[in-house]
Image 1: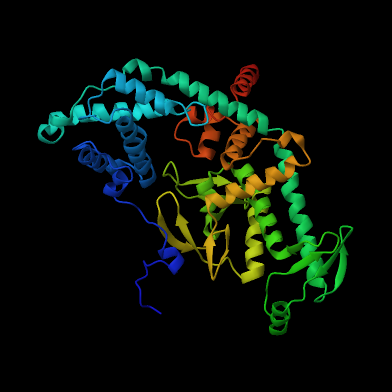
Image 2: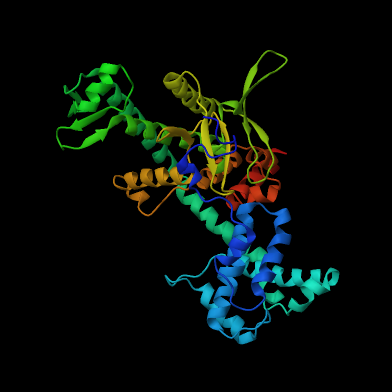
Length: 443
């Protein structure tokens, strides 16, 4: 109606989403009771916020206020100032390093590094502004020896990731076949349901089905409107929303195909739009399809050539939208990391949410992948206890690049890594070593 400005949320549901917290609200989630500490954290985070995105700033605030200081006050209720005794520090370290389940906190080194940076920043800033930071300068409780061997911790993380990739690499073909077969099954079931009249019995896949004939179904048919088709499995009595199942199976197939052939981060996948496809024509007349990846983690846009498999998957998504709407419709998108609404764009991964079309969320992608793995575990024991995360496809893509003989610096460019060392951490060290030997023999 034009009452609200264009920057307003598109619906009441969107307006009820919590937006970005202020720095004061971040700190007050676990309000420090030690006099003056709350103000120190607020000023510290305000200064650090200049070079950080919202998600990183929120994580830093949570680490300092909840994981660090809230637990310090629990082990030492009479704590005064930022100077910690050795006994208090060791008790705090023991309390946070052991999880309630009995396991150990894997990113403990990162926690210690952030706390050490906090204390050292206060010491450094006190030289420039002694009136503000000088009273809070205290000896850093985290010794240098505790964080010196960061390369060892990084190596262990890479080893865990390499093991994760090694386990999932032989399982990827099973997952690919599963999502493809599920889509084909529900696509044909949808066609059979649509061909049947209301209430008619039909057989598909050796199972007896019956299309529903409710009052709503009859009303939609009389009006000639599209609606979600449903059918009853007469053998089990299960009511199946065939349209909804076919839509979910299609996007399961599409996301697996695109992620494994492009190596995208989950944010990059969900930010793909109809505008992301470009054509480049060589001097000989050959046309190459390109995919423009919008900035995400590295904040750098990159363009990658599309393989035939990747182009087919993206073309199927666009074809589906055009068949249903004549074009790829505009959809709203909410960034759960920055907690802001983005401009409406023709996102490839979108769905109808109530009366509005909205881009899919990372939670939806992770949940759909987990459901696929759970279904596979019933027929393939290898999937028992194994889950595919969106980032696993990125590591598998990097491994495949190295196995195919592509130089690692080109792989780094395709993945959007700023450093080749980051790409090395994505690939099994044994495969890197074998690739180096092959290249030396070739030379």
